[in-house]
Each structure stands twice: as C-alpha cells, then as structure tokens.
Length: 149
Image (cartoon, rainbow, N blue to C red):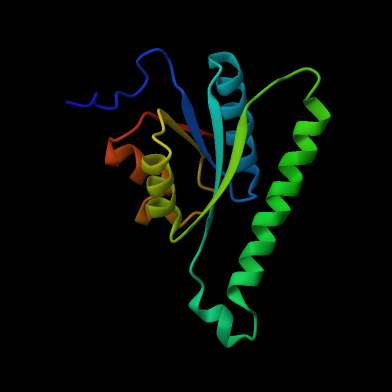
C-alpha cells in the first residue's frame, strides 16, 4: 500500500502564497518567503487568472491581458529575488491557474501538495458580507492558512 501524503510532518515542504499584485498579497508573499527560508521549503507563488467574460466584449483579448498581469508579477518577483539573493536563499516557483481566486488557490494547493497556504487579507469592503478568499480557505479546513494583513 503506497504511503499516504501527510502534511507538515517535519515542517512544511511546500508553501503556497497567493499573489495578485495587491499590497496585501505582496506582504503575504514576503511573509511566506521568510517561512520558506526558515523551513527550507519550496515557495510556490500562485497567480490566479480570473475568467473575464466582459473583457472580450470591450475588445480586449482576455488571455493576453491576464497573461500580461502574470508576466508583470513574475518580472517583479525576479527583481525582488535579484535584490535580496545575496542575503536570502529561497527556492521558489511561479504558477498561474485559471478561475476564481478561491478555486484557483485551492486547486494550486492540492496539485502542489501544499503544507501551508499564505494569503493577504482582502482589501475589498464587500468581502465582509460575502466572505473573502482567506475566510473560504480557512473554512475549507484542508490546509493551515495564514492571513497576512
């Protein structure tokens, strides 16, 4: 019988951090980077490309627009890593998933066998009523979730 995957047995091996370009997501990525460095874990930075049905109606090729955001985030990550590479060594990967932020991050955490998920606190007032991505991840109860303000 194959061994069952067990999260965090000797500390986290994979830490997923959601990144969308917001200030809180950059703080979450920085926090997750410190965790990954201290635990010698892989930092998986995840951008979820939203489905934007209305974008095509405005004449914007949706896949190109969202790919541009992902490429911009990756360029900013590489620049940050270059600036601090002498002081900090963190193994990291950048992944993109499609969908709404909750389902995209959940899919990423499952596929990457994440031991922990780190996200920024929602900056949108409407999430107090509907529920933020962070709250939904916590309620799913499938991974330890850290919410960074």
